[in-house]
Amino acid sequence: MPAMSISTQNPLEDRCDADAREAALTYVGEAFALAALDGIDVDAFAEAALCAAMCELVAVHGEDGAALIAGRLADRAAAGEFSVSRRQ
Image (cartoon, rainbow, N blue to C red; front, side):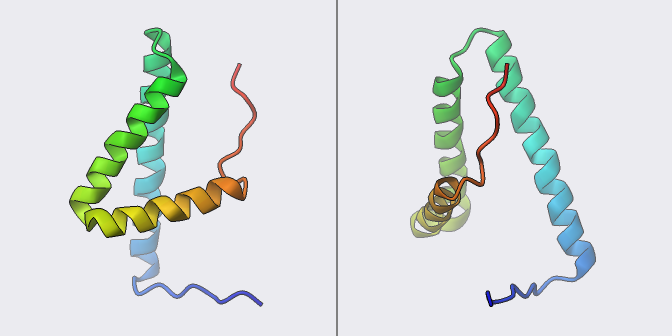
């Protein structure tokens, strides 16, 4: 049986964090859509977005912390967590 994750925050704070992440993802999705409308290659935009995100993560968590986050994202991607059907 997998270990259960225990939060040190209260449920209201957890919900606020989830709402913030959902709002942030909406902003990022809109930025991708606007870039595509302007004819920017989606792959180039995605790489630029990852680089910008890593710069922010390094600023907040330092190089080692950012590397740990990136490693977890790589594991999640390999597990198929980010797979979606191709947009038309």
